[in-house]
Length: 386
Image 1 (cartoon, rainbow, N blue to C red):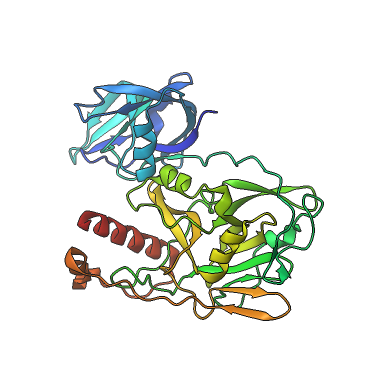
Image 2: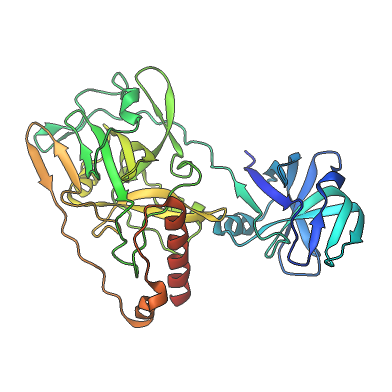
């Protein structure tokens, strides 16, 4: 199945880095579909590019040239990695061009026609992007019968006769930052990170990033519900530790794709306190994975996708980056089982100690856009130091 995408190819009425301005009144397009190309190595103009996809829709409105399309099956894997890393962007290909020079020495392109676009390292417009759509949801696998654990049933009936109710996957009514909680019926809810929680392993106060895609890159599986409907969900895993920080989105997601490590299916979202999840424990979860889940805090994994940091996985760890106060996971089974995982701040030494310079110190913020920018800045700095 072809991977689809959406993009802002160009801006109209604003200058490029070399002082060209597309006149909104002069734009047109060749007949669709149009080629989407990729420049493997830097060259003059768009020289040396190869076709990797097709532009299937194109619209000029609100000062932007926007498009959607799909990749072709023969597109090299490097294209996907570079898009997911946010290091390439689209540059529009034009023909039938006329232009004039204005008094400020801007080159006004008074007539132009879109004939394609090319993915390059340095697009003419700095604020354009092409974003790959999320991969299709994984096919449902039939859950195994419920598993008895620690003198209490995580879910007290056989599947698939019993499925979770739809309201378990709705935003939970939480009046404060709430540790991840599992009820005696198998319902899972709580926060995985708080907006005002500083990352314990990064310099300054780096807070968790908000999702620009509505957690679409986490919701890559599907859950059937009691009412016969289905909902996109993500999987909480206990077993594989965090993927290597250098991996791109797809490779990192594959790192967590272990059926034996899956313990819960949840929906993720945001409220005024932080990033919440809500869903259910999988009846067929392996006892070993459940044990890890019960005895360890959870931690999110964010990767750069199309220029923004997106949550791609949540896994059990020894030391969470954004610890939730007090118990990390509560199991309510008629009696409270307090599962408090001890943690400590990871020492910072060597080259990374330089990141504690005054310019790396941030003040606390609850603004999602600012938090996302700070997170990106810190990750980039640490990658350069690695």
